[in-house]
Image 1 (cartoon, rainbow, N blue to C red):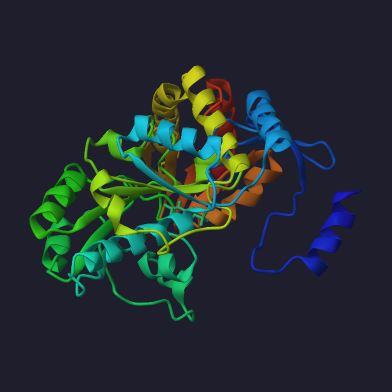
Image 2 (cartoon, rainbow, N blue to C red; image 1 turned 60 degrees about the vertical axis):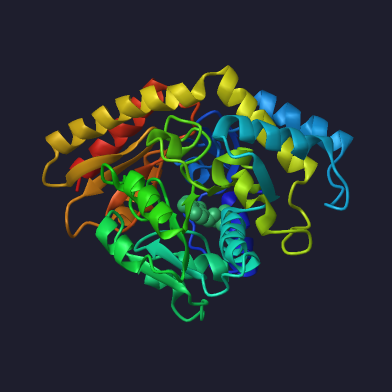
Length: 398
Ligand SMILES: *Cc1c(COP(=O)(O)O)cnc(C)c1O
């Protein structure tokens, strides 16, 4: 079926809560995607930092197919061999020994929120329920996650529950001022993704750890975008050496197969006893097999180290664009293979995306003025150079 026919059906039958580019993809390979007409695109977005091992990785595909023919689902009334192995593999890499599995980033953050409140409730500290979060933070679209999200336009009109106070990302004094005896947790992205690819100021995460310890509050990290090798370490928190009490994961974890996870310290294991939380699909062997294969591929192909090296190279390429086009872009920032090119005041990043797509390069916007690069970790240096060349040429054209 042609793109035009498919798009006509999409206009009639898909719920119009998104406004996608009018491109219909049918297949991919590595960092390349192909549309219905066979046009090739360089995918430097990776489904918003999701497709860590690229498209159509043969080992990933084989692991999913083999698991699909062996066992897809059994529920949490029983164990299955796959989620046990995945929990062990995540513990070995994170130092956080307990895994709860769910299906998305928002769900993983819901679990963190319930964990924090219930941890203190179980200890009789029932008034410790407030959470401190950050302006421009993104934690997902379900109502609990939305209460922690720090961008008003995502929340407008939904009546998201309260109990969350937002302060400026990077402002340690503002956090300390909020850390009263009613605060159960601080939730922070180790590098803000949707908010505009904003790295933490030096010492900020270390300061949060110390402030949480002093106040008796938990430090939760949303690693949905930064986890699974993206920043050049298995987890974003390992770039600072700060140990969170619990983290959320999703995006890169399944390499595109939906899966989320909450990883916690042993001390938090009693916080959500049987009956307090769950998910029908969570820990499903199919999704867990996909995730195990992602971890395996990242390790075998040294893609976590690669994210650091290629990320540095990408940072230099973007810095050169900033130097050459100072009236169009004013900076670059990020870590590993999560990088942002910051456009000059008055420019709108999402307006640039269709021009890039016309020229066969896919990126996303983060915040209003940032072009976000979150390529598959299998991307080559040559592909990064190709992408940056096109970005520069499109920006130079106005
Ligand atoms: C994408 C994202 C989420 C939400 O994940 P979903 O799978 O869309 O629910 C939460 N937190 C961060 C940091 C994200 O980047």
